[in-house]
Amino acid sequence: MRRYTLPETEIPKKWLNILPLLPEPLDPPLDPETREPVSPDKLLAIFPEPLVEQEVSDKEWVDIPEEVLNVYSLWRPTPLHRAKNLEEYLGTPAKIFYKNESVSPPGSHKPNTAVAQAYYNRISGVKRLTTETGAGQWGSALSFATQFFGLECRVYMVRVSYNQKPYRRVLMETWGAEVVPSPSPNTEAGRRFYEKDSEHPGSLGIAISEAIEEAVTREDTKYSLGSVLNHVLLHQTVIGLEAKRQMEEAGLYPDVVIGAVGGGSNFAGLSLPFIADKLRGERPDLEVIAVEPTACPTLTKGEYRYDFGDTVGLTPLIKMYTLGHEFVPPPIHAGGLRYHGDAPIVCKLYDLGYISAVAYSQRKVFEAALMFARTEGIVPAPESAHAIRKAIDVALECRETGEEKVILFNLSGHGYFDLSAYERYLKGELEDT
Ligand SMILES: Cc1ncc(COP(=O)(O)O)c(C=O)c1O
Image (tube, rainbow, N blue to C red; front, side, top):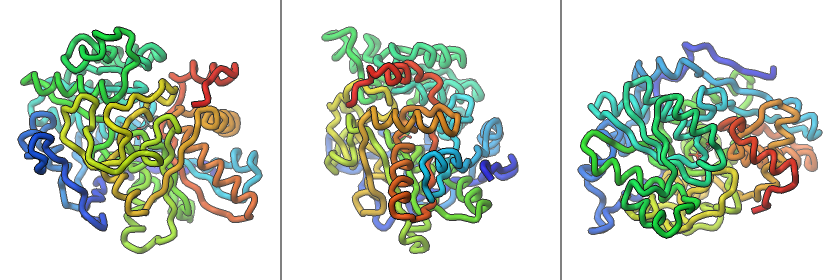
């Protein structure tokens, strides 16, 4: 079989919370002023109560509300594919599977949490959401999700992506959101950069500062984050829970699970349900690999320490691998991977040796993207192509060793709004950062 599909009735009814399964607890977020664990009040200024509760929940399973399942059923369950054409092209004995999150209306895994976050904000009486977006995928997902729950949405879009991807902006506006290039003159955080350089390329860290500042200074507004936080990773576990059922249908269990890492949400969404088996001692040999760009090598080159989640320092201090909150990566085309930190859950698993990480330069990534597009037919998002690159490299190693490894990676999104990057690669103009 090439495609493993599940009926709508098989959408998972619960998310998997990895927190109670971790071998040691996460280090708590700290208040930057006191360096004491941050009080819930401060988080409640930014997020609604149900999401703050999920952030620290110790329940292994969390019910998915009916209203969220209704929206999920517009595209979930997503298919699991066996990449047989790619296997044949590579001449590998490995079996390559991928979970296809590109089939959601916004084109990525991001609505899995956007829909849940819009719902919890709505039932908490919130009227408006602010957020940031890098590649435009997260902003599109939140614009899409807020529609279903009658919320207004303002998206601070990293300027380099705003300029590179005008159609992502139009998509967000089509779903009713307002899109502002960041850094902007709207906020104090934005003005710090904007006033020095009105064409500043921006970064996710700066855009987060702008969106949070607006949320804490307006009564009717809260902030929504598309990655990094525990509750975001929780919502994304629908990916891995479905994939596990689908791998069962294929009669296989992966030897290697791979995902691209920006803040860590699609990687964790696919891998955590499998990592849970490893943590329980059931799959000690499972290999889980995070892939990042060499231009923003958070896990492979960062330091494990407390740092701010944004550039200006409005968030609590978070224990994570970080390149420093003032790090502004070069404007690579995988805009969604330009974040200076990573999810604390992913960092803890990396620090304890449960997962490994690798970094690739952009041309290596686009070479893999083209191989995938020309064999499997889907044009991958540049972010997802990082995972494809590693899957291909593992499959090529198997060609040498003769091992028949089962490889599973996350196709976190499609690249139909990233064709200008493809054009640069095809013309030989893409920088190899
Ligand atoms: C398609 C796609 N994949 C991956 C990512 C990286 O984010 P995360 O690590 O949270 O999955 C993004 C972020 O925008 C994205 O758009």
